[in-house]
Image (cartoon, rainbow, N blue to C red; front, top):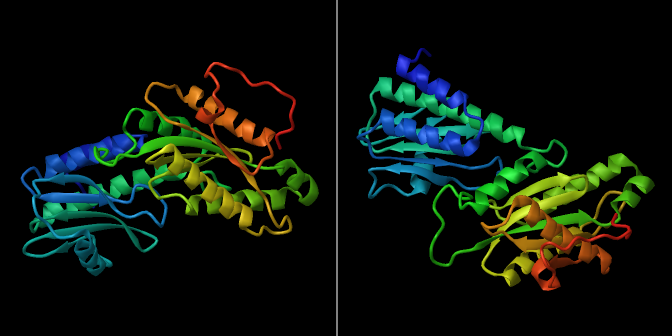
Length: 317
């Protein structure tokens, strides 16, 4: 379709962004500019995970509206069309593999020109978001890749880990955990790299399935995984990590049969650098490896100073 000059400028402004948070913000600003007097809500599924639900990203002039479930019912009527327009609302869904992964709900009937331009810009936003999301995925494990890790830790440490502000009541803390597949070198040496890759892929799937959609699971490197997750307490964090470790330990892997994980974790605070957080989690992981493997260790429980350096010739893999 042919867009107006304003539409062309909006399109360029979206395509030039290379960071997801900035892309979200720019699209919300565009909605406010295009439809300044309209009551509207914009929802998005913030990752490619199928188990993640839609989350409210932006809302304007809305006090009372339909429940999201009712909006999604209307979105199912939009198949083959960019929007569903009635006398009292306009519904614009975004789809990926026949799933609704985004939804713009406007509490009025938009004009054809406004509807077409808004739908066009929604699609530009989606394709740019999808491109950025795919670039963050490790091709083997389908987890977030190592290059994304530092950025996510910095976002969380600075309080930007949520699309919506954190809840003041019943707040959860963020933790960083590192998991390593025990004796992985023996897997490759005994069964070959094809089976080794299968072990990495299956372990990644088990870990991803056993953490919440709003948590982040990374392939940190080789057979090591990093997890940024939320918990109300250190004890709850320990329980969540032990559950993930148990699920992997009880699974059956092709030819290898069973594998175990060792892990270490620390709390994420806004006064620590990424390298310091990783060092603490890594030292807790090292302690787990050194003391029998197949366990998860909390850094604070070690009573170590942050500047201490671990050195040993213990075989970790």
